[in-house]
Image 1: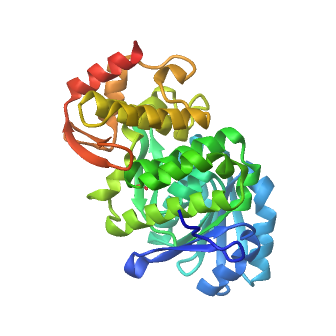
Image 2: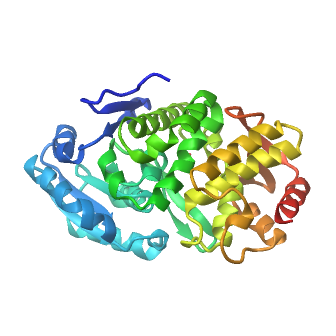
Amino acid sequence: MSALHDIEAPTVVPVGLGARAYDIVIGPGLIAGLGSRIAALRPGARVGIVTDANVAERHLAPVEASLKEAGLTPSTVTVAPGEGSKSFATFEAVLDGLLAARIERRDLVLALGGGVVGDLAGFAAATLRRGVDFVQVPTSLLAQVDSSVGGKTGINSRHGKNLIGAFHQPVLVLADTDALDTLPLREFRAGYAEVAKYGLIDNAPFFEWLERKWREVFAGGPARIEAIATSCASKADVVARDEFETGDRALLNLGHTFGHALEAGAGFSQRLLHGEAVAVGMAQAFRFSVSQGLCAGQDAERVAAHLRAVGLPTRIADIPGELPDTDGLMNLIAQDKKVSRGALTFILARGIGQSFIARDVDPAAVRAFLEAERQ
Ligand code: GLY
């Protein structure tokens, strides 16, 4: 696999969306230059930063300093860390904070944090004054390789995860890879599940590269940047083809139908992080594909072996605590956004790097598979 980046210069991955095109800029030490990049887009703007208390402690001061140095006027709304902040109450508080800071249409919202902050701030930007531009500064691996790119924004409802939201593309994504140095190992691993996902969807050489290089990706340095850039290039390509998920973009949901049900079953808690649920879900999607005669057993074993090697869960039995029974999990699967008029849609695989969208999957087959997985 050829190096995608130059050590000296950041890697830039364009997202080709015509009038809504933007760059994903990836590399170390980028926060220091954030202000000048934003000033080039929106000179003299007010910038409404949305962040959480943990991220603020580590990164807010350098972000504010960089913005001020570039002649921008920052203000900050800080929310509580965790999935609980993707709520109506916090959404309202963020909008109030941005309005109080007089963020207007020609100003910017800046999401500084992981997936929760990005989704929440993006949705606030989509609705504030009927739409204000926003910049993503993702500080978790999961956000750098997935949630900050592609414009999906939103909050949770008591009926399920991400059920209220909007497609609203950022005008810039700046992924400072130094931010990952302070990420707890468990969170880094959870984000890595989404990195592996890109190999499993349609890039078998990338999966093979990860099997050889994952230790270097975890250690930091060039391999980490390369893994992030390859993931972002895959995501940018799918989003440019299918911004509103009417087709191919659904491939990015590999592992997410089983995964969301498990995540909901564990109460969206620290018991099972999103990326961990995706890891179990991807291993299950491959095993289910094997059970349907679609995929060779050795491919499913290879997927699970790699996820296990990096320390990710691959089976329901790996998840601590009680989970709903099979009927309960089937009910949660039926609530998923990937269900259309009762028909189950799954991302299944004919092999590593050969995933496809399977519509009209037989619920009885899924139920029997889940029952067997519990044995
Ligand atoms: N995280 C899946 C997507 O952006 O479509």
